[in-house]
Amino acid sequence: FAARSKARTREAGLRLARTQAGGQQTTGGIRRNRGTVVEFRTIASTNREPKAQIDAGTFRADLYYRLNVVGIHLPPLRERPGDLPRLARHFVERFAHQQQRAVLGLSPEAMALVEAYDWPGNVRELENAIERGVAFTQGEHIGPGDLPPAVREHGHILEAGVAERWSLREMEE
Image (cartoon, rainbow, N blue to C red; front, side):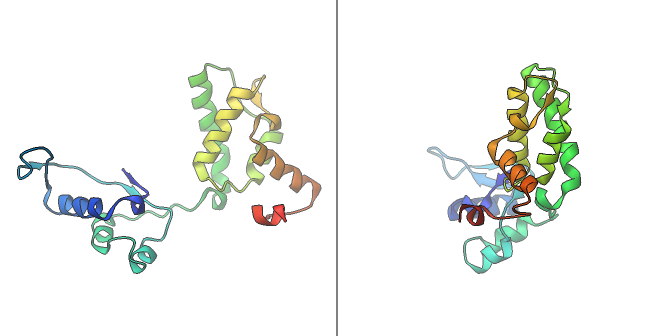
């Protein structure tokens, strides 16, 4: 899995493109001219628009076309609010099992905060918030106080009717 492919060096991109093209890559060590046949599939993801990166010269066009066999666009979590309850339930079950805690889910108030929050960190941020909630809760349900401050504070602003959706910069000003 090649996450954040833009962070890879140009040389690494070239080696990956060559390997994918021929299924062969030289190995390190004294006998660098010895090739090793490899068989693999690559899954790559990015949080940037690849074609814009190609135009800017920061991503190799040949590598993009080799990697882009099946493209899947997954919108950010804030554009998929219907996924929140299912993902939250999944993470509660996973972390309750890992931490050996008898946590059954989120309270209605905590779920309202989860649904009101924009999740700029996407699924990883939600996952971390639920892991924290499972660790902090004293009962069978994660309450608002068990959630991270950013999620709680966003909810309080909404409750007060001060803002619908402000950026962090707007809130700080």
